[in-house]
Structures are given as C-alpha cells and as structure tokens.
Length: 452
Image 1 (spheres, rainbow, N blue to C red):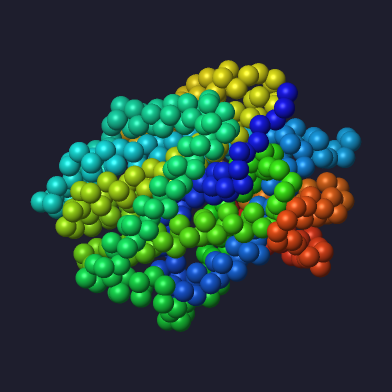
Image 2: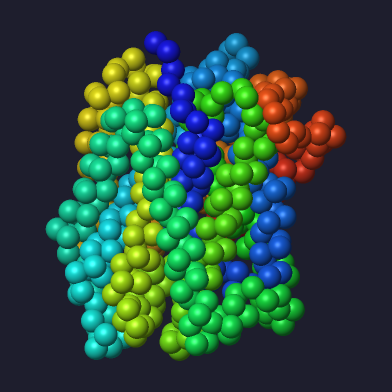
C-alpha cells in the first residue's frame, strides 16, 4: 500500500510546527524568560535551540524520512540485523499515549474557557476571588471536564480519520494560519495598553540584576530545558511527519523553519501576557494559574474584555489542539503500519483507548483528589513527570545515539539523509559535537529533571 504524503511543503511545516507549538509555549516560556534575565534568557534559549533542539529534530525526521515508517518499524528498517533499537519505538508510542492522558484534559480546559468568555460568564464586576472560583468549579466537576476532554478527543480523531491530506494537513493549515493571525492581533492590542512598556521591560530587556539574583547557572539550565522540551522530541511525535516527507528539501532547513515558528509563538505570547498584566496591576504567574486565573482577572478589567478573553482562549485552543491532532496521527499511523489495519479501524480503537486513559486525569482533581503518586504529585503532574522528565529526554538521547554511533544507523547514513535536498545543510565538521558533546548535554538535562 502506497504511503500517504503531505500535499505541500507548507503543510508539512505547519503540521510539524503545530505539534511543537503547545501549551508550554504560552504558560511557561514568558514567565521563565521574565524571571531569568529577560533578553539574556531569550538569547541563551535561541543558542540552545540551535545547538540542541534543532539537531535532535533533524534526527527524528531523518529516521522517519529514510524508513517511511512509524516508530517501531522505522527503527527496524534502519537498524543493523540482530540489534534491538526498535524496542525504543514501543516506548515512543507509550509516551504518546501518556502525553495524551493529560494533554486532552488541559486542551479541554481551553475550550471550556473559550465558551465561558464567549457566553459572557466572566463579567466586568467580578472580583479576583470570583474569577479564581470559576477554575476551581471546573476542576471540581468531573462531568464538565469529562465532556470537554471527550469533545477534544472525538474531534481530534475525527479530523485524523479523514486522512493525512484531507484531515490533518487541511485543518492544521487553517488552524495555524488562524493562530498566527490571532497572536498578532492579541499582541498588538496588549502593546497599546497604558503600562505596556513596563511589561515589555520586565520581559525582554536584558537584566544583569535578575541573572545575579537567580544565578547564571540557573538561567543557563532553564534556557537549556525550555529549548529542549519546546519541540516535543523523543517520543516519535516528529518522526512520523518525517515519514510523510519528500526528499526535495534538506532536513536542517526544514528544522530551522519549524523552530522559527515555535519560537515566534513563544515570544509573542509574552508580548500578549506581560503588557496586559502590568497594565492591570496583576502579578504574572507560571503554569495553569497564569492562564486560568491571572489572565481572566486581566480580561474582566479590560475594555472589551469578553471579546479579548474569547480570542485569547480560541488561540490557546488552536495551540493545544494542533498538538493533540499531531500525536493522534502518530498513534493511528503506528496501528496501521504495525498491525495492518485500516485507518478507520485504527481511529476507532485509539479513540476508545485515549478516552478511557484520559479519565484518571479528569478524576484526579475531584473524585480521586486524594490520590498522590510520584513524589506526592497529583495525577496530571505525575503523568507529566513521566513524559517530560523521563520519556522525552531519554528518548531524544536514544534517537541521537542511534543516528551518530556505529552501533545504530551510523553518522554517515544519518548525515547523507539529513543533507539530501535543497536548503541549509550540516557540515561534516559537526560530527564530534554530535557524537561527544550533545549526548553529555542531554544527560545533564535528564539528571536535572530527575532531581526536580
């Protein structure tokens, strides 16, 4: 059976960038940048993105493009006879399921808040406590969270059921175009607010004082972590799109474009958040409280806040849903490749599995709120710990070692695949860096993650 491919190069870039652009871009990047020296952090982030994130991204894409297969079979097609690299493919698929076990719930929160703002549930007269209570009420309701999670899962698999070109590529093109328009409109609005300059100063102006306060080592560490985790590498989420690519364009060139879009969204998110927070005297926070408590507090005090709040959560819905669809595509493609079943059957089976697997996260805030797992973390944080601190960095290290060591596919074959086609190419002089320096940097990230 002939493998599907993307209809256009733009389709590949937007779908891949959509997978990378997610909730972390918005609720982590701006806050961490502001706390870690502003422009100094951003510069370090870009350096590490090019030095670490981009090379590993080309490795996942190279394995996919060279093998034309999903996770397990991709390794099998390229590994030496008798070697066991393909076992990691099973961990990749497990990682995709684990990611969706909580990501679908958080994506559902975005949809819920979009409807809440659109319906006028957030009113200008509301105080900070009332705004915060809306989020508490959402978490306390397994039925409301379950409905929005279910809607996210069913819609995501419905899009993927229509095929790569007519489903994922077509919808991702529309959503990513809309996301980019929304983010520019929202940022433009924030930049004309009364105290916008104070927010921009906190966010982007380099601050030696802040670096001294938190420590240069901490700033470097945060920049490394953010640049590495922003691309969702290590669980074959990107590898699958490599398997749909043509050989027309070199992988470093495509990776730079994906990283560029991802970074654009991350930086623009801060230009939405900080001018708004400083203009309305609200202290910016990190994590879910920034999105679901702090920003709604800003919007209820803002002229036209109902509309701006609805637009912001529509943007957030697109950012999270683009990742959901991309990972669903990986699960479907894996089932089709591995077990020889049709796409429709693969969609149905995976939809049921993901719906059931997502329930613990939904229940972890209400019925199972007393359940604490890894290091006293709740269900969502435990699932996130396994994915972010173990499966992503360890998986990235496996892809790296597979591509650059003689025990795996080998550097020369990876290098040839990577540079095939028009566009930016890697120099062979990078071989020692890829073989000896990059693995050490990733090991540092793994150790840091386990010590958190």
